[in-house]
Length: 280
Image (cartoon, rainbow, N blue to C red):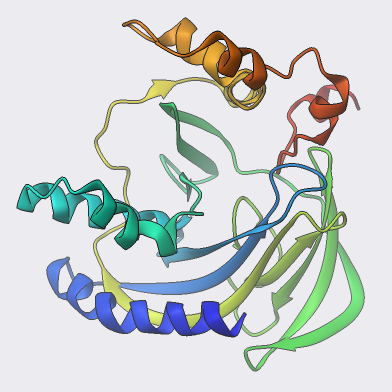
């Protein structure tokens, strides 16, 4: 945790000033979270550093590590430097980033837009979820803010969140929101996913908005189905969607397809499960 805090502080000092000067001067409240996530049961957890940027009722949640990785690629490409060893060395501290973005209040109030780079660049919209939080008679202090606990079960996962009583913003990390205060800490009951606030600051950034890019548009449930296929049969999915030949050995392809292995299938973790809504 100390290492992560030091890395975040160093990177903030090194990049935020330049970043702010290069963008339009819109005031943004930025919450920095240390994220711990697990992709498969019984395997080690990973760390990511993520930002929640908020402006006038609109917010953007994304991985700082992923953004740094993209910036490094862009910088090297502009220089015409294609030294893969150098690229890997520079990107190594950010290699465990998550490539999704969540925009609340986009394209309009009450809506949420999700984008992710998972072989293809996916995009979907949905209503901002109603978590049906139950506020608990428990509190704690996070970053000198008195926080109260609340619990909710959402798409197959039970969450406990701590929201700041003195920051009346109904937002939080990932898709979590809907409480009478900003969520500074959240974790699921199984211990596979957690978000811990490690910084609160005001910065100047460009206005929050969707970047112009080419996306594979889908519904949330379609995305979840495709994401499950990518997780359980990645080579098969790549072969099915590729416009050119996919040259991969039969042994590697067979080993990556776990759909007929119930034990391995049961270990695959998802932060949310749209199938759980249909099972109610």
